[in-house]
Amino acid sequence: MQRLTILGSTGSIGQSTLDVVRRRSDRFGVYALIAGRNVAELARQVVEFRPAVAIVAEEEDIPALRLALEGLGLARGEHPELAAGVSAYRAAAVAAETDVLLSAIVGVAGLEATYAAACAGKRIGLANKETLVAAGSLVMTAVSEHGAELIPVDSEHNGAHQCLRAGRRGEVTKLILTASGGPFRNTPKEALKEVSPEQALNHPTWKMGQRITIDSATLMNKGFEVIEACWLFDFPADEVEVVVHPQSTVHAMVEYNDGSVIAQVCATDMRMPIQYALTWPERLEAPVPRLDWGEARTWEFTAPDLEKFPLLRLAYEAQAAGGTAGCVLNAADEVAVEAFLARRLSFPGIAEVVEETLSRAGTRAAESIEDVLAVDREARRIAAEVAEERAGVPAGVALPSVHKG
Image (cartoon, rainbow, N blue to C red; front, top):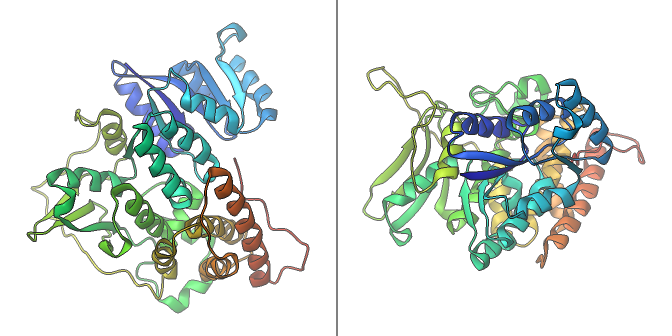
């Protein structure tokens, strides 16, 4: 039986992972559940899945978790080990009892634990884009040197992983990632300055957390996926293409040197790529809807509008720049998205903040995870300053903190 440590268990990917565990309890168990500050949901998960360890982001939340567990009828003697903070994340990720780390926590909060798991030679189901966007070179070097397995969980990269099984890497000429286009695919560029957070959070296909939903609306999420694909599959950025596919049924395509294009197609249900990452190279029946090929359907594919969605362009440029540019890109975007959600920045202002932060921060080589985290902190500081300038906020008035842990 494989025992899982789930980094981000209360989020949508974490909950989908636990549903896979629930349905395949003969194959999977849970060693550790790691959450942010959603104590109530974590307590419910602990009662059902009985992990050996339960971890929250902040020490101050442990008493609340203990009370929640008791309120659900779990006596203190039955509680798992309770811990908090990044050091606890790392310890669980490298524990001998952890066979697979499912890395799904949003932001750089999961970077240290994921890197530690790579250094420990673990299998990692990666659903956290920021890990490779911010520290791709360091993480992939650790994977190679320590014999870890990194299997992507994001639907597009998971689809690419499946398509690449059709031939040798040297036979591949192009990797194609699909994007739904988000809620503003058909919105005129000049109308985007009036977009509200509520409109941007209304994704037409997926139900996700707030930041990733906004990133999907700006196409920044697809930019992150381009960077992630470059690191995962060793592609230069100019061999990774993005196409808008509103039906979100074709998740990725790989073009081979003989002109053949292999596509990965399935329903929009994250349990399939999660289960694939856990069982690879084996395939098991997954609890997802099957496509009805007798049903009439139309699939559309169009090029993205880089003038209307400049963050996708900036992602390509950051990957080409190398060094810490990806880290700066991610940090600036997170700050800008939070400012937009707080109604202190316009929708187009997100891209303006990111571009200016990249310009001011510059790029350099990162020799360690500590270097990456230092760049992340500095980029957030610069991005907050730029966001204040764009919002007309008086000097010295800080934007809300966006580093949730």
